[in-house]
Image 1 (cartoon, rainbow, N blue to C red):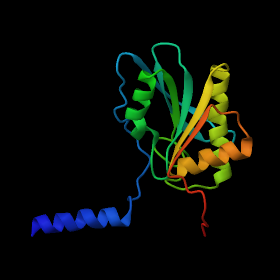
Image 2 (image 1 turned 180 degrees about the vertical axis):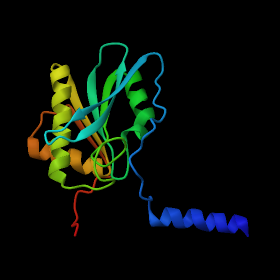
Image 3 (image 1 turned 45 degrees about the vertical axis):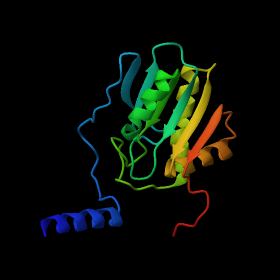
Length: 175
């Protein structure tokens, strides 16, 4: 009986989606191997919101920078393994928690507008370009992050070395 109840609870939890989660307060493990430099910080958007960012840098000169954009109800730390692997292959990785996600300020899991998300991504890409003006910038977006990365590429006509969209919502209507 208990096994069946636990299975039912797990099934219902999956079917109902992720529960409301408050802003994370304790840092999760983001360690990196010795040949990858890791750092995290916060930056302020043009309208004064604090966003959490992370960087994984290869020990040698970077071949380019991958800006990773997470999905809805997600956070940048979940992509640690991918970021470490990219850094081990010579790419710098920059990522941030979107407003209301992860360690960033804002109403939990609330997206005010895609325009605001695109503006935040533009700020991150601009900072990357200032720090490494001679290196290519690749955008990698997952889910809602793929939608934002695609919108950014189309709206800004940014010169990107590459654009990778994983499961973006490219068509639809939200009421």
